[in-house]
Amino acid sequence: MSVFMRRAKVGDLDRIMVLERETFEDDAWPEDAMRRELESPHAFYLIAVDDEADDESARLLGYAGLLAPKGGGQGDIQTIAVAPAIRGIGLGRGLMHALITEARRRHVAEIFLEVRADNPIARALYESLGFEEIGIRRRYYRGGIDAVHMRLTVPPAVARPAGAGAAGATGAASAERVALDSRDTESKR
Image 1 (cartoon, rainbow, N blue to C red):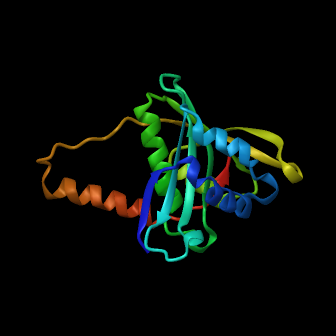
Image 2 (cartoon, one colour; image 1 turned 180 degrees about the vertical axis):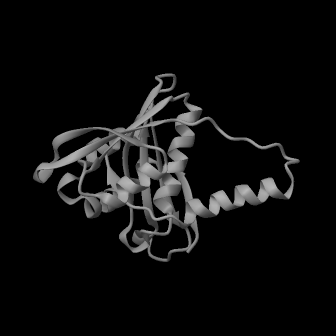
């Protein structure tokens, strides 16, 4: 498997909707709403694909979306989903890091999201990324499930000079390895 992340396009909509419905069942977004997200200049959606998969339907491994108008100061993680067969390898964390990086590029100071109260794996992922719980939205999801409302104060980018030596390179590689080895999950809004 060779995982490649790229910006989502409207042409990816059919595959995204298959994973959306598989992952979120009753809480899945309608196709027209997802299309508007993909077309919005204020949204940033990524997909992760296995570019070596023979079966076209098996190529989409995950997707994630950020709504953050440039210069608006705030953003929202709209959705994130990872195919069931590859959960736990760090893809969800990788997608989240990419969204946080894009938020920083858009000069976003805070990112918000909602996660199902009954999804401890997703909550743990978000907490490990620095999100903090700021409230509960009662009966937000179908079936009367509460949503935990979370916020991240976007940290500044960390840069090291090119001549940082072996210690700097090892530290960066270790940080990336930790990010990819950590558990991931799917969550929504």
